Image (cartoon, rainbow, N blue to C red; front, side, top):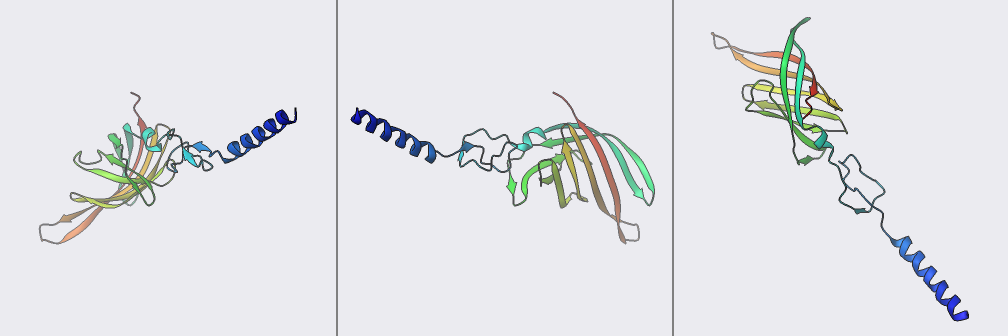
Length: 171
C-alpha cells in the first residue's frame, strides 16, 4: 500500500512539473490579427492583417484644386495588393490605380487598420498622405504634386488634395 501511495505521489509530482513547464502555444506574430502576447511557442495559426485589406475598391471622392475649390472625383478604381514585406513600422501594402496603372504607392500599416503613405515620387508625380481601412471601407487623404514647366521655362508645383472613400468589392 505504501509503495502504491509513493508511486501515485511521484506521478502527480511529475505531472505537475510537466504541465508547469509546458509553453503556451499561440500566434507569436505581432503583426497578425490574432497575436497572443502570452504565447511562447508559435502554433501556425496566425492570420495576417493584410489579407483582409487585399482587393479592389470602388471609390468616390473630391479633389481640392484650389482654395475652397472642390471637384468631384468619381469612379476611382483602387487596388490594394498583398505584400509580405515588413518594415520598422509594420506591414507594407501596395495601393494602385490613382493616376496611372503602371505605379503602385507603398503604404505602411501602422496599426490594425491605419496606414501611412510616406512621400514618394512616381513618374511625374509625388504623393504622400494617410488613411484607414475599416472592414470593407477605405478612406484616404492624400496630396499629389506635379512640377509643371511653363513656356518661358519657369516651373511651378501643381498641388491637389485628394479625399477618397471606397468600398471593397465582394468576390
